[in-house]
Amino acid sequence: MASPTPAHRVTGTERPPWRVVGASVVGPSHVHSGLPNQDAYAFEIVDGSLAVVVCDGAGSAAAAEVGAGLMAHALLDNLRSMSKPAGGAPAMRAAKAVRDARRRLEIEAACAGRPLADYHTTVVAVILNPEGEGFALHIGDGALAASTGLAVDGAAEWRGASVSGPENGEFANETFFVTQDVWADHLRVTALSGVTSILLMTDGAAGFALHADGSLKAGFCEVVDRHLREVTPTDGAQALAVSLSSEKATLNPDDKTLVWARRS
Image 1 (cartoon, rainbow, N blue to C red):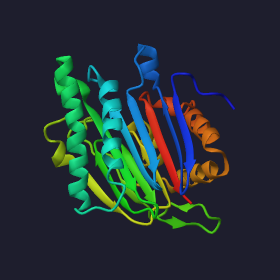
Image 2 (cartoon, rainbow, N blue to C red):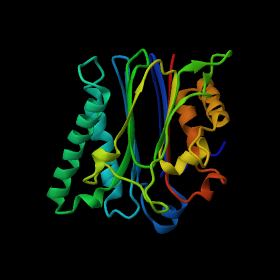
Image 3 (cartoon, one colour):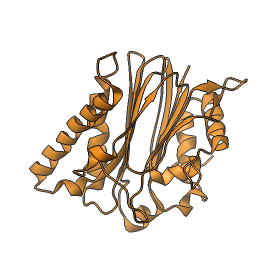
Image 4 (cartoon, rainbow, N blue to C red):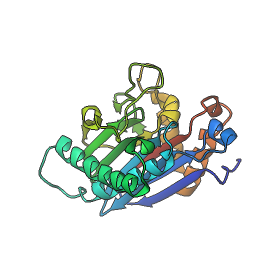
């Protein structure tokens, strides 16, 4: 099997009850232009609870990769603090987590003398306890799919999975960013329960898992889930990066990020 290029980022870990594999690859358009990967992801397992954040910096933003990276880690910090039971509806808790993370970006922008728009980024994230209960939050054109069932062979059952699909604007390639003033109007929150497997991805990778109408490609999710269950997290992350940078994948010029997590 080919190895991913050094510009790609791969991460795999296992800490009961979660196994997590993530990969982020630079899109062909960025390679040709000498631009960095403007996607970012972060995840952590704390006391059996899982937090994952995936961000996609806007290609038109001057500091897109900085915005995506800062948002991913700032939001992860905030979600981690919500890993234990607490009062408040998921929508309220999600809004607070995003609002506090945005402040980190606002401070960065002020210190750099830049407008916040220079850090435009989308975000999709999830916080789940050891029983697979929690919520997902989403702004922009990334995507998330969560399975709550198991097939006969123990693989995740993706037919009927919960999906939070991309939100696009009025025009082609238009979406919404957590860094816009109207971010709260586009914050989507999904309560989750009994999650067995979950996929989070930027829009560059969404074509792998979603049809054009936003419905889930259950067959793709099943193949990924079965393979990643059978290999080590490290090998799984490497294989995922190779798939995201395959010849078929390069038909989409964008950066591509996908994080898979499975609860045992």
